[in-house]
Image (tube, rainbow, N blue to C red; front, top):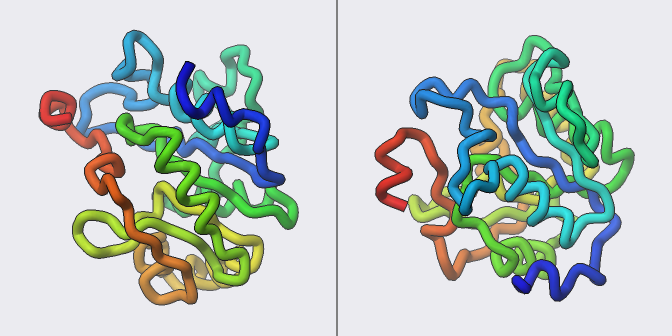
Length: 199
């Protein structure tokens, strides 16, 4: 039994959101469906990880015709904000769905994330900040494994309206809690098939 299962009883009143709406063009196949963990799809691995800590978990997709939306799933499907490119569209939809709760975002293409990474982010969470995030190996905030607070929704919407859709830039410029990651390599994402071999 892994650590996430052992501490399943300490779920937070927070919405966990798996971002699965990327086009996966460089990877050459759908990253959400890629089986990195003994046949377990990445989207399933990420939802199970969040389910150990969050009272509610959802999956963000690019459009309602996504096959994730048509498959039977125990997790609700959220459609990204239309007309907005990038993961910020999923975060905006998630913040709306959270209805005043925090939003714990995890990208579906981070296969090395584990329960210890998720738990540290939750225990270090500062809900008086706009968000709580890890510092990636490049020294910049990691936006795709982060907790976004309700207070950042209007500011994020304003940023997008002004043409700034970068979540990383939003975190760099905003009042956010940044924490170190003891295993920064665990924040690595799958962008190409070469990354599969490297990880």
